[in-house]
Length: 361
Image 1 (cartoon, rainbow, N blue to C red):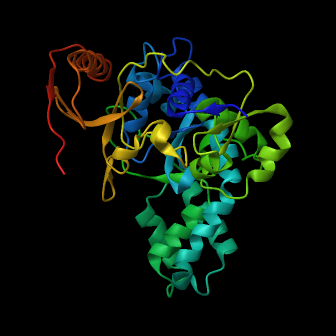
Image 2 (image 1 turned 90 degrees about the horizontal axis):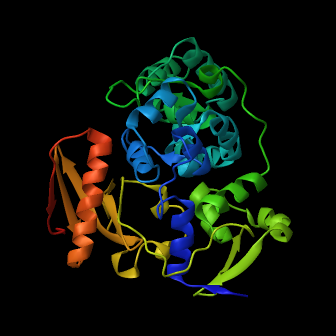
């Protein structure tokens, strides 16, 4: 069985992520679909994620798609908020529902005596009557179960119902409170029946492969997906990584040469590229493991030669790059050029100050 080292896996994944070459063919909605969603715990990361991947991207492209309800913000993979297409919001959420149900075990002491089926019915009525904040939902549910933990009641509603954040929350250059309604109500059509995971396995490999069973389970926050891979095995090709782990892939998926040039890229905090594999060595060198986090805070990240190489922050028209190591003169110039390009895309034409600092901590 052929062996793929970290650089070969890196180039294959970057090509599928449109991080070796930005896509000139995909629009914002099509890119969100190809990537099977964008991590969206904060408002801005999906915009920066697409700016790194789409040629000619404008923040208004994604914002308009969200205003038109072609994409939505909903809790799906790994119990985290993602920006998904409308179709994926209605199909992926049922796929991961079992994981959302398991979440409730941690809150069972606060839900003693609560009929979760009835809670889901009442919660749906509340948020479909009008979008509600988690606080408003909590207080309304508390009227039905005054002895339950109010926070646990709201969590239970979030876990049992496919709640989306309604606009203007998430729109570019706008602000808005986090108000929730169901995906079906917001999108005007029912959710799909719980699907088999096979189609999602194929889409994951198209965007993140080659990958192991454990990689996909890590990305999705699901377990027991080995059977899906075995059903699909006749349609897939297999490799091993340097540690001997079996990797699956689509036969016609791109696998560029390991020496293919990889230009620098600025990624937002929580970008799925860094979260979509159990073994992240295809992007994160072993010496830098854990360097993109501080407590519960994630840093914006910089790729150089395809691998994690630093973090960055922006304050107005000043962008500060903090490399983890020494960049060559050529790398600094390329990083500065990419930084200026990104700032023009996200902030418009103007004068920008690109600085290089030192990582602290």
